[in-house]
Image (cartoon, rainbow, N blue to C red; front, side, top):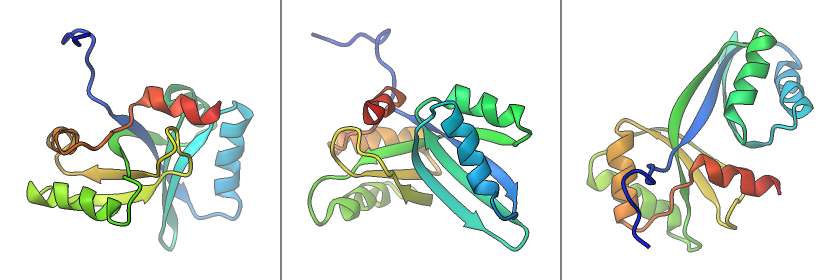
Amino acid sequence: MLKTEKDYSDPFVRQLSLFLENHVGKLREILRYLTTEDILVHAISVIDSADHAIVRLVVDRVGTARQVLHENGIPVSVNPILAIEVPNERAGLRMICRSLIQAEINIHYAYPMLTRPHGFGVFIVHVDENNTARQLLMDDGFKLLDESDLGLAGV
């Protein structure tokens, strides 16, 4: 069956970015808010500085998570990122990087996903050219996750 343009959507995942003060137990508090609403955290990255931390999260229900955090006074921004399945071979990550470097696309930051919706490791990347990187990776045969894939790991 042919996919029509109407039914086609580019695969992307949204991440939540939180700017938090460094206080003992603050991350636990954030995770408690999310688990109370039965939100599954697929990936987490914490960048620490002296007074603040940037926490990046990939969750199964972005809208609900954003609302819950907002209701609890946590400032949140939402950004599109790429979630790339890593081929089951030693050079999997290198192959992804090679695809991106051939088009001179910079990776600003990256982190792994904790869950495996299709049984493969997943590499989360934020790049300077999302649309170009997405198309390039798909052309090179990589599977990119969509937010609909994130519900699979919670089942």
